Length: 108
Image (cartoon, rainbow, N blue to C red; front, side, top):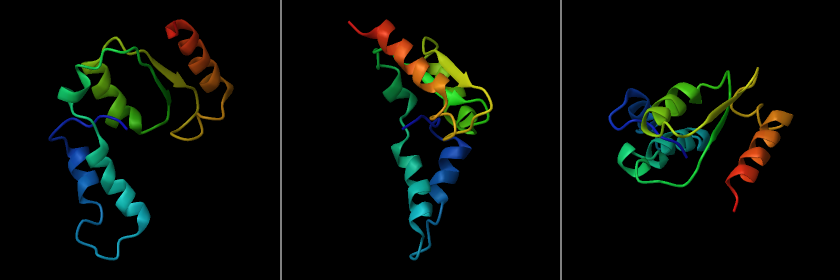
């Protein structure tokens, strides 16, 4: 789940993926559903629980989700994993270390 600004070009593009293709591949349907899963600014603003974003520094999601999210939730720390994209950041030691440190800091 992420956030795409309401009315933004990326949200519109996700919604158009295989829209008129009755034989659309599963991947296309998944891509199109991203527009429906994305939270709106109005939905994100009232979330007052601590949160953090861990993202690869080469991940295109940074531009689609993270940058707009930082404008709405400036208190949300963003940790970028060097030389990683959307999936390759997960097996990196820094990914697990970042999550463990965040949990330790934010657990009561």
